[in-house]
Amino acid sequence: MEKPTTLREAFKRWEEKHPDQKISEAKEVSLCFQWPPIEKMDSALDMLVNCEKLSLSSNNIDRITGLAKLQNLKILALGRNKIKNFNGLEVLADSLEQLWISYNSIERMRTVIALRNLKVLYMTYNLVKDWAEFGNLASLPKLEDLAFLGNPLEENYENKVAWRQEVKQKVPNLEKLDGVLFV
Image (cartoon, rainbow, N blue to C red; front, side, top):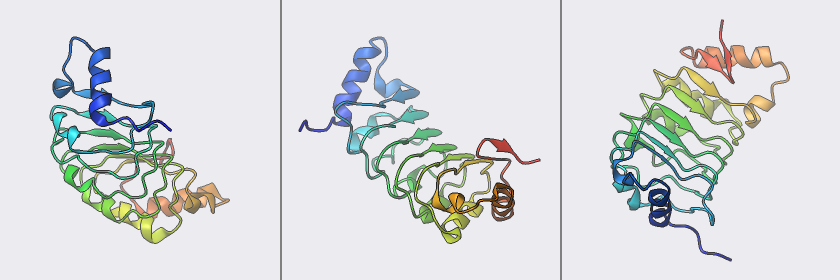
C-alpha cells in the first residue's frame, strides 16, 4: 500500500501546476483528489496565510486540524473525506463564511456554534439523526443557506413540506434549504 500524500507534497505538486505563483501567496488553493490521498491536515497549512478558499475534498482526512493561521479563510471544502465532527474549526470563527462538508461521517454538531459568521453550510449525506444536534444550527446568526439532504434526520421525513417547516422553525434565519428558497 502506498503511503499517503503529505500536505507538503501536495503543495509542491500545486506549485508545479502553477509555476508563476507561490502557494503561500495564493488566495485559492485546491488539493482535491490527491493520489495517494491526503490523510492528515497539519501545521504545513500555516503557509496558506493569504488563502481565502481551500479545497481538500475527496481525500482520506479524518480530523480537522492545522487551521489556526488561516485567518483569511472564507470558504473551506472538505467534502468526501472521513471527518466525524466539526472540532478544529473554532479557530476560523471570525472568518469562515462557507463550509462544504458533504459526504463525511458527521453525527455530532456541537462545535459548529463557534462559526458565528457562517452563511453557507453544505453537509448532505452525513450521519446527523437527531434534532438536538441539528438545533445547534440555530446558534448561527448569519446562516442562510443549508444543504442537509441524505442525513438520517431528513430521510426520516416522508413529508418534505413538514421537514422544511420544522427546519424553518428551528433555524428561522434560513433563506434556502437543500437548494430551494423559502417563500
